[in-house]
Length: 116
Length: 115
Image (cartoon, each protein chain N blue to C red):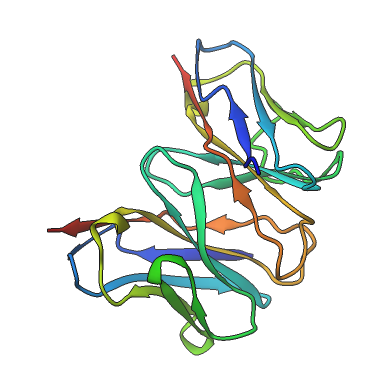
């Protein structure tokens, strides 16, 4: 079946602009995660959804970042007033349940965001 | 709090040689531990994970890792390197008990294979 998909694959924007990044999880996966990977670093957790609700948003760096998952499937990460420091690859992952030893997170290819 | 430290940002081995990528973890609760691989221009792929069932974990592509609680280590090994193993490898940890299963990643080790 299809894996996790993310659109766009690349996004170039200007400082101060608003951007939306989309994630389509694997069908049937109730858990969805957003991570951010800066150049030369490992992925950094941003937010975790269980169904439609954000179960853990402790990784969001500030109130310019917001994410939604209104129907428990597709999720959108929204960044307001972008800054050059927001440039990174934004990764989305999904898993079947979000709990338990057998639960595995499957990652999408990411969206590379460049803020000029 | 949980964290992982990967020793060596870049490791280079000859084709056919042993691969050893080092990872030490810190966790106040029993951990789940992972190794992920990231090939150029591709997404993260799970190599293997430790979930307390067995201390020696076998993964895909001939890789394995051993959980050593006394050393707080989870090093990744492969007996014989192939050119196709060249990639970025990430060690990671998450909380064993938590329902919020976010993963904390290390900074990565780039593996190069010499012909």
